Image (cartoon, rainbow, N blue to C red; front, side, top):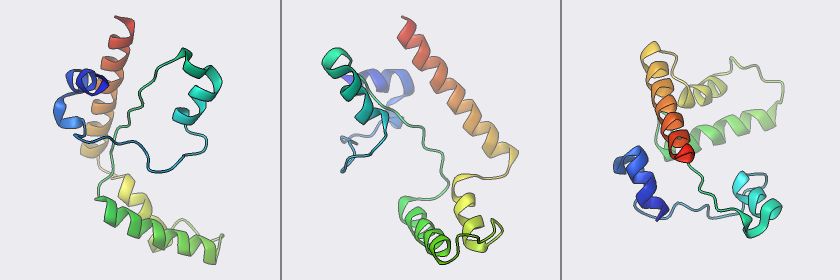
Length: 118
């Protein structure tokens, strides 16, 4: 199965135990586009590298605050505390964090293309 192959490539600890299909259609995503373009000529699996710094509840809370600010004044500067907080949820400005993200991303990329070339 795909789950078994992904676990072998990336490590079982990185693969969710349950089906992670989206609960709603995502317009513009490759998972929607490829079947429409190619029909049943292609089989695909989509994977994502999570690199956020907070759990989903905190992220949604931050997104709601930032969204409120954006709708209240679309010219709000990036220095606004809610905008800075939202950025900081996904980007930690330390060399250690940046190195870890880039190292893992390069590892995933190399394993993926190694598998596809085989």
